[in-house]
Amino acid sequence: MNTTKTRPGASKAPALPPAVRLAVEAARDKKAIDLQVLDLRPVDGFTDFFVLCSGKNLRQVQAIADAVQDALRKEQVRPAHVEGFRRGEWVLLDYFDVVVHVFSTERREFYALERLWGSAERVPLPDEAPPPRGLAARE
Image (tube, rainbow, N blue to C red; front, top):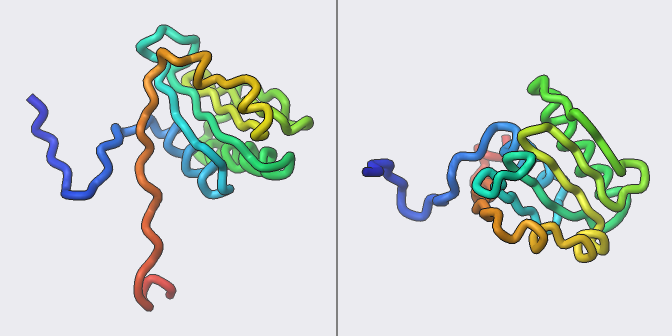
């Protein structure tokens, strides 16, 4: 029996592994578009999670990928493989348990990994932090 209580209005998103959470936060900080997490564990994938997101242009795609790498590097987590950074159309960051895909919007539509991995569970993401309120929050 699940006795976990949530406060009214709280997100019911499951706890994400730290690397996934950090990747999501870093991508959000760089205004990633259509951020999604797929749980591949039930479908016996080669990794546990995909983090999928898009950028509007080459610079944003690269900035998102850089931010994810920086956030995880601060936790001493380094990718086993990075692919596509220079072209900036589809950057793949392979951390074994999580693979981060940062696409241009055109490449995201073309490859449609969400459709390809349609049997994977989409993980609801926690809501973004609310904006600060009041004078004390601005100090």
